Length: 415
Ligand SMILES: C[S@@+](CC[C@H](N)C(=O)[O-])C[C@H]1O[C@@H](n2cnc3c(N)ncnc32)[C@H](O)[C@@H]1O
Image 1 (cartoon, rainbow, N blue to C red):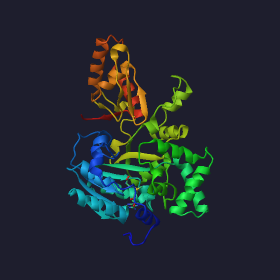
Image 2: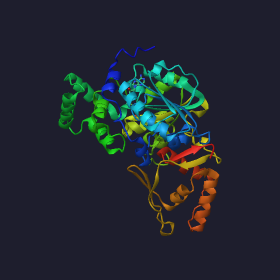
Image 3: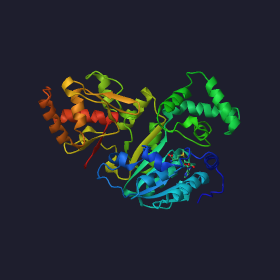
Image 4: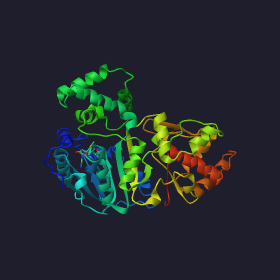
């Protein structure tokens, strides 16, 4: 049993700087559209491609920080939530919110992940941005897996080294100068970042997270400290991540967003050695290739399962059957289409924009059913609009699988 009075650097850091910035009006924020990536409704087909949606889950939130547990409890009133953290201050905020909203479906406890005693209990285990701060990430992940039911799913996020390399250079540099995570230290660090050459690797990271709509980590002290003064954090490359997962005895099901790891970067010639070598890459090699050619993520967010049958679900195109369901994922209409004027419109998500031709638009609009149905409906519409196209199952599957690799589509076995 970990002695929680043994102040660990991590515990003190998150005591002093609870993370993320506490939200005190979560209900209003949710009404205004606030969402968390771990929301089961948003990623259901990623979590449980074999099951129809249900909202009465038994959920563990490990390392809940300030807002995650309240968000889930409010959003999913039919689910039961158990949330742990080692930061008293974060848990105090959660407790205040439980009281303020009279929340009945959330139990919280001060506990280290490795001290969890639950076995085979949770349908859904969430641990985002936590394992890489723990003393023994391997032990932490194994423990989380143990708490999951056999048919449960785990949503995990750990740091990825590809975009974070400059962060670690700066963490080291600030340590050389004995900067501390206090007002003076934070100011000095900000000044040094300003003075660092613009091609310093850290600027790629800073630019990337400033451009996302995420937590705007560098704009508040707790986020800045979390990034540049963290008491303990480790980033993984793809093969270190694979080792972490393999050693825990877990099976990697999928990324929460395939685009970071499988998106098409190049149009290789259809024949020849390049495309052959590229097509032969296994899912880990492809992810490593994509990030090494275009290092643009500091995070791995992914879903783990306990059973081998779910490993790399749908990576192999032959896993996609005529009876597989294909769904639009994340991207929604940004510019309308006008098929009669040969305009497919634009779909998007955050700052991503994808221009569709009319064939792609017709396919996109017919997603949400079995692929056989998508095929039938799309072909009917091609005919109706005088478009000279008749998709075979195989050619449609290829298009949909490419969408899946780019992160626009999810597959499932059930509606
Ligand atoms: C970066 S925050 C992430 C918070 C939350 N999961 C989120 O995504 O908003 C990391 C949290 O993990 C907690 N933590 C760190 N080590 C832990 C451990 N061994 N067991 C439980 N919680 C831990 C910290 O106190 C902190 O609240």
